[in-house]
Image 1 (tube, rainbow, N blue to C red):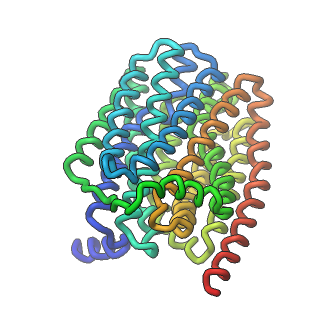
Image 2 (image 1 turned 30 degrees about the vertical axis):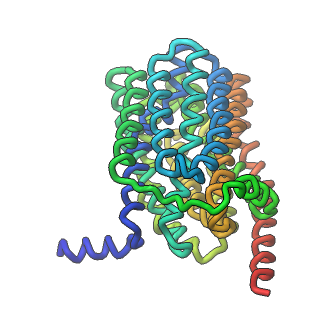
Length: 424
């Protein structure tokens, strides 16, 4: 019986290179560290250290600015015979661990910005590089399933980190310990890459092609249209990760008998439930959406973000059962999140020539930085205005998805035209 269950489980998983599974474990460990701080950063720096929500949002935005530089540098380092993919990952882990240690010791706005800049640069190196390495090791037909599995590994790490972080804060109030746990996660990731991962970079015949690769990628209309839509998707995701915890803590009271928002423990449980649902739903939803084109799968994700934002608005104004509405919102956001990444990566992989893969994934990763430059500063600025603006902000986000859906529909037509031309 145990053998049958094990066989059914393994048959459900894609058959992947062993290095891909090692990188998946590394992603899980890295995200475990990030999970300790992801949803508690704004709460700590605003409510514990006394920074304004706007200043914290700007600090988070500075990490995204540094992330842009990191992503640009990553594409060059990945395609360098001196550095390559593996050493770029090691550099990313080193810088991220140092940044987390700085944030653990932060007691001034200057240190907050320095820590975020360093962390942003380190993560800017990380994302395009690890996506490029994984893509080097798989076939195009494995892309969506592979990155669905990678997202499951991410969510497992995040979920455990979020729940443990909530327990640590709930029992001890030691927010700084969360950043130290984050640093340890990056150190463990460094050791795993150093001992288990080999270089996948294949040197090009001419190093002068790097500038040409960027020029060709930036002239790819499909890629640029996709980048606009993906940046909007990241803006939506950033609201959930960076703005919503503070909104729930300071504005969304659990019921009419209390004046304060949800407790940190309640918020950690909400996000833990979100992550658990994402883990369970990732592979089934990815495979269900494969019957659609990737842009249409992203449209489905966008509709889920819109519905989730409307439910968050209800959470803020409902006379009762606000916790129930919050639970529903986290469930909708889980569906939105798991629908997005495999479809998005599939688009990039289909567009990228093998010789330009690192550049295309760098541009894809730049969408993350741009989304976080826009999202957290905008959201935290609104939270600093008034409770009424904070409530209506979620309706504004829901309305903005009309623009994103239009962009994705246009991308779908462009990809169809590109397919027709390629067959002629």
